[in-house]
Image (cartoon, rainbow, N blue to C red; front, side, top):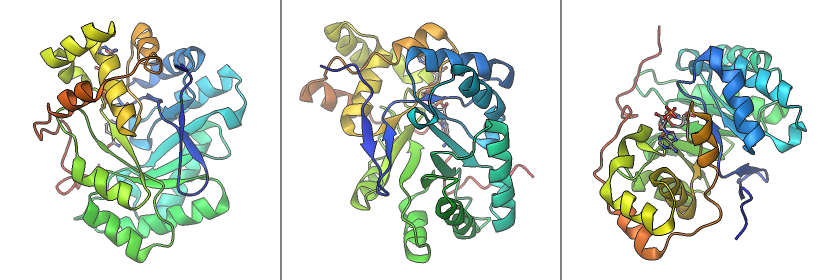
Length: 279
Ligand SMILES: NC(=O)c1ccc[n+]([C@@H]2O[C@H](COP(=O)([O-])OP(=O)(O)OC[C@H]3O[C@@H](n4cnc5c(N)ncnc54)[C@H](OP(=O)(O)O)[C@@H]3O)[C@@H](O)[C@H]2O)c1
């Protein structure tokens, strides 16, 4: 079985590596070094955001790694404070400057902020960035079906991905089904449930059966379900461990046992109630 990271096709003809490195809560001063560790280990997909305040470190690591730009997949996300059209465009310019890049591979609206009520306006700005080629693909994050329905009805570009919370305690099946029905790739954030799910005895048993760690088993479960993942770790050995998931396979029984751990328990905010713009 191949150990290469597979890519999934997106609905606009581009593709995304199914495993990446996420940098939420990676401190800005450690970002350059940790992203460089990830790139040297073999990751080619980095998931950052304006709100993580570490795009500069991501850019410095990319520059230091010296890899061909077309081998990298870089995602960033619109800060909640900037859903207004011109503010979104200006924020995007700042991201490119911080990253030291002339385009990103994916730009997402980070949260829909339903009470703010401007995500369709923000989407219009993302569509312009997409048409300009400076965002090779655009998508959403934390969008529930009712938010996506508005984008599909009022926008002209179908989101390429929807990035939402998913881990063994929270399967988020309704959103995954909606995404699949509309040719939108689902990306699973907090794929390890921020490490909290890893103590589960079912995962320990399956990990022992396959001579793997619980984290590798959980990441493999996501990948076999067809979702994209980008676990975060500030620990170099774990960064490398999380890559070693493409040379073993979970059985149907293993998959069902992990899916059966769903408790409908979110770790992060509910998108219907998250309206914090940080202002
Ligand atoms: N769109 C959104 O709203 C949103 C929200 C949250 C996250 N995200 C994205 O998703 C990425 C991942 O989510 P996350 O950072 O929230 O959580 P996560 O990846 O589910 O879990 C990270 C935690 O798991 C630990 N860990 C990582 N690998 C491990 C391993 N092999 N064994 C044991 N523990 C391990 C890490 O510890 P150490 O760091 O100490 O090693 C850290 O505490 C983020 O970095 C971000 O890119 C997006």
